[in-house]
Length: 151
Image (cartoon, rainbow, N blue to C red; front, side, top):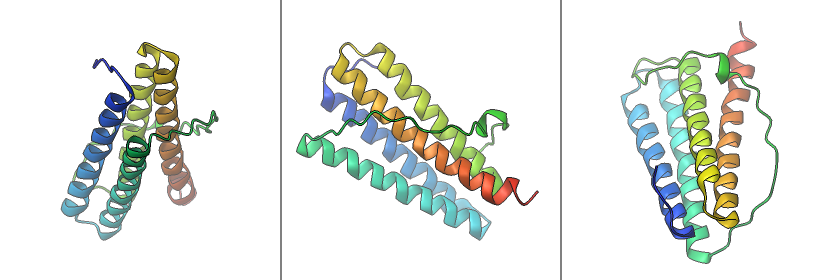
């Protein structure tokens, strides 16, 4: 796992991860055969662009507002089989894919927080983990409202 020397290293890493998510969701949108799934992935990509911009603003302005908060975990993704990205994904499969991706990002930032060499870096990683858990919650709520309730 990468070692981070300072806050800029962390922010560069997080910005790069957000860009990877933008690229992934954009590619999935372009390749989706289902119009609803195409739109969902474009929305995901736009949201990741906003997250990337927020991180870039933090890096440029040096402002990082750490707010300890608890995010509800519906644990829906805990009971779902992983879904491979494909152009033929259904809306439900695209939500499961996104939940799993956000859960993995949450775990990554949580692990990095455990390994942080000081409290400031640890708090930044924990804050990034909270952001990822918010994204996961959004997808879980969407899945609960539009998939589970229809069945």
